[in-house]
Image (cartoon, rainbow, N blue to C red; front, side, top):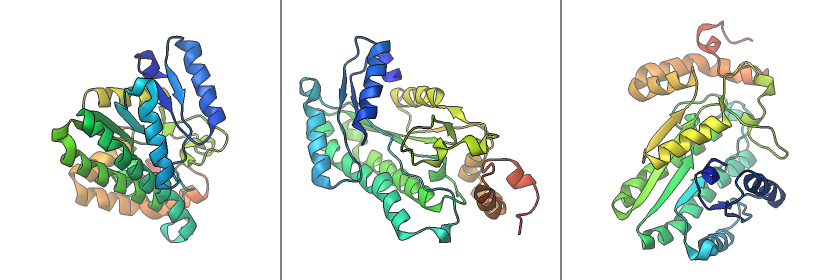
Length: 270
């Protein structure tokens, strides 16, 4: 919606075509001059299917090509201990969060290189910057994204390709049908202070259009933890070790998994 207000031509992609059409109608109702195309896509599908999607996207708008690729897809399991995760959960998480995202990037990047310009904006997570007890698989997938796109940036920055990695903390996203992310099921953790989805989108666009390599978006205590882990890693990891078991316990009880009380409160319950 915010890109449309800036005059961008939009290609909307996700699995649910009906939802995409609904979003398109909403955009056009508020911005009647907007140019919006719907291109359904399943990021967990095979490479040939993704290749067809990329070629279709490149051919839209008189073959103008893609200037910005917003990687926003994510699959997140309910919070649980690392040893409680299953092979099914591992594959589901990495197919969407890592393999599909990297494959789509690898297929689209050559078109950007031919034009000498392009920008990948990657919605990662605070979980990709710090230890995240109770979300080991999700955290691992986001660390993988951060590593891949930081490396890609270094390889292609002299060829006109830019990369902005955005690492949000808890975001106040609306609950929708078929949502798989625990960040969308916030009613059980109502004491959390979450950044609104509109503000997150605004700051993401600001970061990308100003060429930032990385942006962190969150309220406290998540932002403070990110800074401590980044700049004082020994202290940061010590703090996360104190929080670890308590956070898994809080998640199991549908409590607040982002509270200062995890650090300063009592011991983990038996």
